[in-house]
Length: 487
Ligand SMILES: [Zn+2]
Image 1 (cartoon, rainbow, N blue to C red):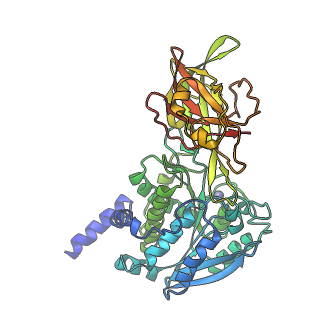
Image 2 (cartoon, rainbow, N blue to C red):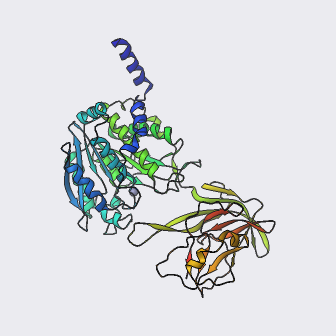
Image 3 (cartoon, rainbow, N blue to C red):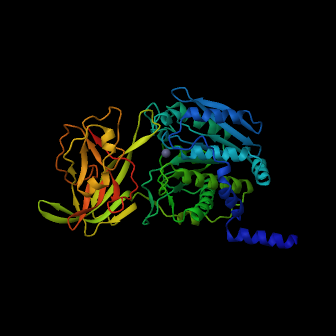
């Protein structure tokens, strides 16, 4: 019997891929049990992490240590668990508006603190000591901005070390001399896997440590772990993985931490259709990072062929929120056919806890090499600017009582409202609001403008695009969030 088992084990090794798929499936299926419920949207703040840190400080399996402070004095904490000789360090959110993996870290901590998966956790914690440094840039997170309070991109400060957050990361890395490092970021949702319409939901990089892009054993190990994680993501989000360009960036942390001797894995959480708050991506991070930790503990990543790394498609940036193709557009009485690429850009509200959308035309012309989360074939449809509703509406309450769909069908895309409350930033209905004396000009379609127009067939409005949201005027259907207010 033993011989047979050994044979099976050898077979698994010779195929080259660790057979950890059982734990991965279990992690995926049981995720909701460990998901940290207090961190349920992207704009998370440092103060929301503090009660969670207290919980782990009180748990004797963990140690929580303050390892530094942000410029504004927010504590940077290192949470550690395990007693193994292999050291793994994970840090997240050095860019303040990149919170997805911070949430995943607290899900992973909940998993590690639970009484479940005893056998696997014993294997992990006897082989590894794992350190988490979540939200490295809390001042940036407070403002939901990439840079820290010094206005510096921490990821270009690994050598000059002017920011206290950078110094903290460097000190922690050096004091642990970590074997493995997970450098956790978010990327734009407009990235796709090269030459496909699939968003790069997760992108990876084993950063280079020199201009020659040499592959040392350490960097090779990072590549192997990436191949392992890619296989997991492919199972749940097929085709939705990209690989970052590995040009050496001498100022970046990933590149330098690789150089300083830690096998470094960059993970970027990108976009996923209908997942604005990136909670599905958070789950994919949880499953793939925990599985990677398990494979590092078992050391069964070692036989993964490095060549598989190069087979992951490269990252590209060719996605729009809305792509309209083959629309007819009239300019100086002549007709042209245009594709339009539209993105719905987020504008933060005061306090950076919430946002509204202000959309833009990003590109127009032949966009056949681009893709859309939503694509509309406008063949046979003509773009036309909407009209201003002739009656001035006195208040927002009156505005809310209008039959908006009917107005859109009649060709109106603007309503004048006499009294717009000062604090109101967005129109709640698919109709642009303009102030009493706002002068609306004829709009020429061009890059940079707010996409608001009608799509006509046989002279009749059939679809409306209002602030970049496409609305079917026959059914009223459309994934609408907000329109604009021009005072
Ligand atoms: Zn980043």
